[in-house]
Image (tube, rainbow, N blue to C red):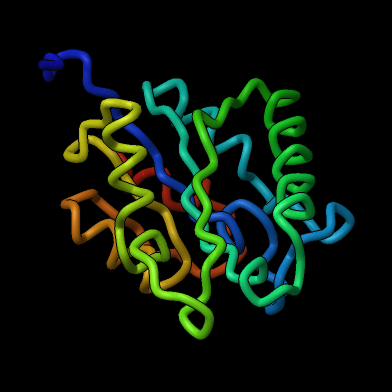
Length: 166
């Protein structure tokens, strides 16, 4: 059994609209993957407070054949490289490739399977952790598990909400 002392505080982040610019359509090309202003500065502050970072994202464009897993992974490689330059590390990027019109799943937010997997794998303390998202479904996934959550406007500089995170 894992000791409560070893549990980690985590910031869960939605991708489109929180990490990168929400364009109103699927973002799957690196040239369109624009990292939101202030992201790495805010994550640096949170890292210094002891948080780890995990991304939880719905990527339904894969199921809809709008782009491939490889397209998405290229965007993620770009993000990871930019984060590394800023001395930021994402523990993992969890994604749901499904769409309700194609298949049913438990990993697509507002369901919480991806969040549950991350919490278990990284020994996350849900009471000290936060989910930052720009959609109601992000909040619903967090609520199902008792994770603190903050709903922001898409593309908001998250430095503006740091005071809300303990």
